[in-house]
Length: 377
Image (cartoon, rainbow, N blue to C red; front, top):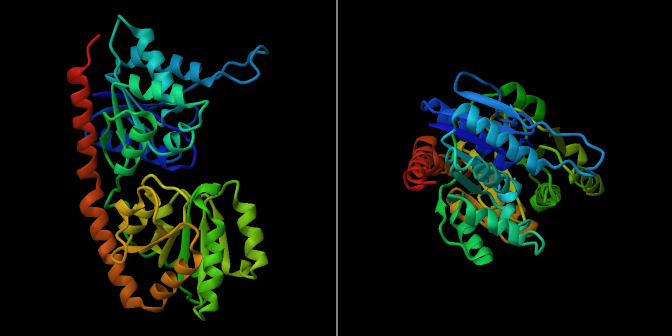
């Protein structure tokens, strides 16, 4: 198949999943054409089967804001004709599904171009539920030829908000060879010079991720008499607030803010516990990647996270904002190496058995084939 994929190229779960999906499809013999405003973060290598088409924006004094939705639709239709695309797979409903539908309609009756939309979370729970965006978001979903969601939670949320039920749940995935615990001793030594255990947080530092809670947890773990350090991977609007709170709590010298990193697996490989105290997670890709690296996860009991993390088996779940319980759970894991390692091994077994690429990617391919089989002009 010739497949067009559109993602947000920035540091976030939907862009990561879309990029990794394209690479996995290419490895299985399909031709993949990424259509986006910039090269996606995880798309580090182009080849004969992986291509990138940049959406070029028009600069014109009449437009106060550049019309990205229209520019994307134009690029999609152009690439579809030039590369003979079989379908478009867009990640995130707004505005990608709208652009894809415009492209599909503009090509009629010369050719058909089915649109598959994958819902990732905030396009439904935040953006889509805003009254001003709800009608157009629902239109993009309903008019798509196929719709997938990354968790059962997200499917149910979409049904409730948009009264639309024809949704296939295809979860996020992890490559079992790319994501496995490996020795990165030099990194470990630089982050933990005295050999202290490491708490790690990975996110885009948006408020919904509650990264400030991580330093609250660290402070409480230290009060338990457990020497540890906190590694904060990523960047975003909340970083200054996190750093300020760490200074207020007197734990800034116990923190390492390392910014965005191209190889998250290295930081997970040196982690002892992953902290994911999010206010909302439709799936929890960071949790899955950590589990594949044998890292127990301490997370909020919210959204799709209970589908990924089994409380008491592969990590611990707590109410949103309950930093006291999260700190107690973290302290228990850091103080008991046998408990931590056993939970880490169960975490990897769970991640690989349910979410490895050769379990999930065929579900997408089957879904594409179903859509192509039933779509007509």
